[in-house]
Image (cartoon, rainbow, N blue to C red; front, side, top):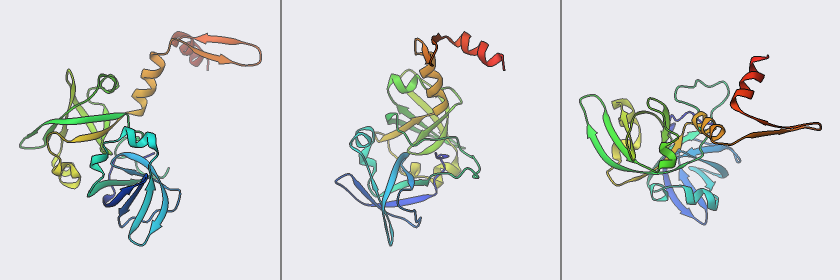
Length: 212
């Protein structure tokens, strides 16, 4: 799990044969999870000036791979003792969005990101979302896009200051929203034990919880 707060920028040395080599100050251990532009990847080698991560074929298909060049956002997995200043981020990318408009204001910058109906269905106004691994708040949900307002501190301390219209970005929706959506859109929940098989509705679940 991650928080959506970047530790540092890493410099991509190469992405070849499913291996991503990054130069960075952070020193992980082999097997450690690291979020790179929001995607949870596993460390398979530690170098003097960085580390090597492995990307499965499925992972590569889910990512905006063109953003894995030059600088990337890096966040190591959180500890249970860490403060949760962002929101709970799994590092599991739901899909890709495209920046369609950037509007600067006196305080803050609006990013409009077009994405799929599937992702928009998992978004809640004023809810959390991770874009390129950064924990952000959804200001507005439009017909085919999201509007995010990024405060000056976040803008200056992340790679958002370098992003342009037309760029594709990794999106991870809030994990709690995904779970609620899944259960609400599943016809039934079947619980099987040695004696019974019962189809549960949300009303039945509520009655069970209320009995404790």
